[in-house]
Image 1 (cartoon, rainbow, N blue to C red):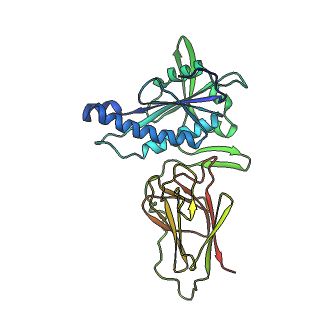
Image 2: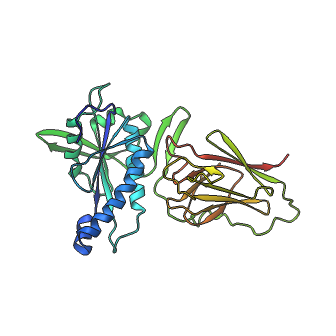
Image 3: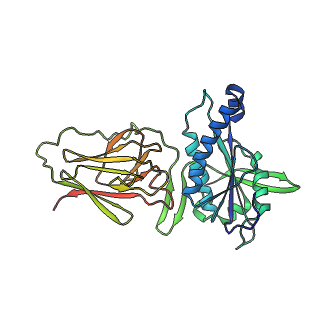
Length: 320
C-alpha cells in the first residue's frame, strides 16, 4: 500500500456498502460498476479537501491521506452526502462507512501501521457512519470537536489493542477558520427547494427600466452581465466566458441570462450549481433555474460553504 512515510498526518478509510445484495440481484459485474461510480464520487470529496488517495488492498474501499484531521472529517461528510444522492440501482441504495485515524506522534507523518490500524477499525462502522479514533480527535480543531456525538462511544479490540472510537455525525459540520464559523451543509435535494421559490419573471415590474447590471468576480477577474451582454457562459471549457478551474465543474456547466432587468442562473451540469444568498440560504440547481438575489455566491459543482473552495461572488446594482 505505502512504502515511505507520508507528510500527511491523518488517514480516511471508506467502504461502499450495499454491493452484496446488488451483486445477488444483478450479478458481480453490474455491482462492481455501481461501486466504481460511488468511489468516483468519493474521490471528488478527497480532492476537494486536499487529500491524496492511496492504493487500497480490497475492491470497494478507499484510503486517503490528509494534512489535517479537520480536512479528513469534511471530506468524509461530503463523501456521505455525494454517495447518498446517487439514484438507487434496481431499488438498492449504495452508501459508505468511514473511519478517521491519525498519527499519534506530533510532527510525524503517516506510515504503514497507521493505514493498517484505520483499515482494521472499518468493520466496526455502520453504513452511513463516520467513526473517529482518539488520535484523529486529538488533531481536531475545537470547532470540529463540537460535532462529535457524545452519546456514541465504542470501545473495540483490534490486534490485541483496545481502541475507543467516537462518532462524527454527518450533516452540519461547523469548523472555525480565521474569519469565524463556517458551516458545511447537510445533503440537499437535487432540485430547487419548494420552500424557497424564486420565480423567474417574464416582464419587468411596472415603471422599472432596464438599468441593472450584474457584477461577477472569480479568481481575481471581474465580468458584467447586462442588456448589452445578456448571456454569460460558465464551465471548464476554454470557450466559456468564465472558465471554472475546479474539476467538479462540467465543460458547459451553467449560464446566467439577463431577462427584463432580472438575472437568471440556469444549470446544465452533472454535479449541479449551488447558489448561496446573503441570508445564508443555499439553493442547489440540477437542470433547473432560479432568479439571482442582489448579493451572493455561486459554486460550480460544489457548495460555496466548502472549506478551501473559491466560489464566484456576484452583486446586482444599478449601472452608473
